[in-house]
Length: 107
Image (cartoon, rainbow, N blue to C red; front, side):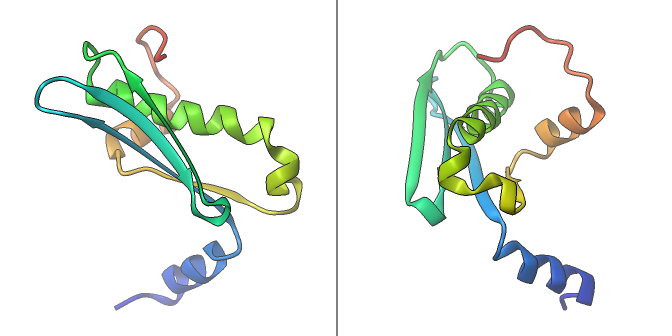
């Protein structure tokens, strides 16, 4: 059952500018990071070195999306609405929330 607070967030998110990130690593070590924006029918992905972890690939996907947003601010009307970034990596989101990334560069 969806609570009224959750339902309000879901309904409100329909008006937000939504960005989805994803990273993957194949069994043979090929790693990629990507993000998509359904509203614009826009997808972007890059192949990364196979020597990185999936955590780093997930972080790279978020970084790519966050770099794209200000470069395309006019196209998305960023000053007029919320931008919501969705990620399926809880561990990356927790590290970002803590603000304690101690490793070297992610890209």
